[in-house]
Amino acid sequence: MEYSDATEAFAALAQPTRLQTFRLLVRHEPAGIPAGELARLLAVPQNTMSAHLAILSRAGLINGKRQSRSIIYRADLARLRELVLFLLKDCCGGRADLCAPIINALTRSCPPKVIADG
Image (tube, rainbow, N blue to C red; front, side):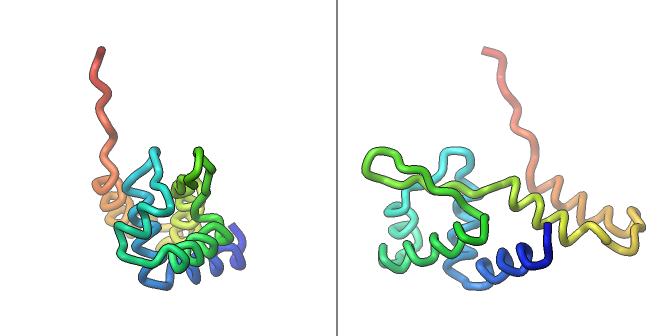
């Protein structure tokens, strides 16, 4: 990831409504959420939400796909991974032991889903 891409992504997330929107979309992966539902859930006017979604989309953090009369938005988890790796790439001067608490915290916050035999 280039510095300019990271800067654009961080700038997009540096606004409270956009950060809330992105976190909400991450929680609703992989199904996504329609734009109107995002506006309702966050109590934001639809035209304001549309502007926020456009900024997040330009930063490459979300994708929208038309489904009938709605646009379903999803977080781009690959882009999120790139952004986190950009931050951690040179973590602690290459001393993995110093980065271990960060990695452990990330691992605990995303436990794997168990798929039951059918």
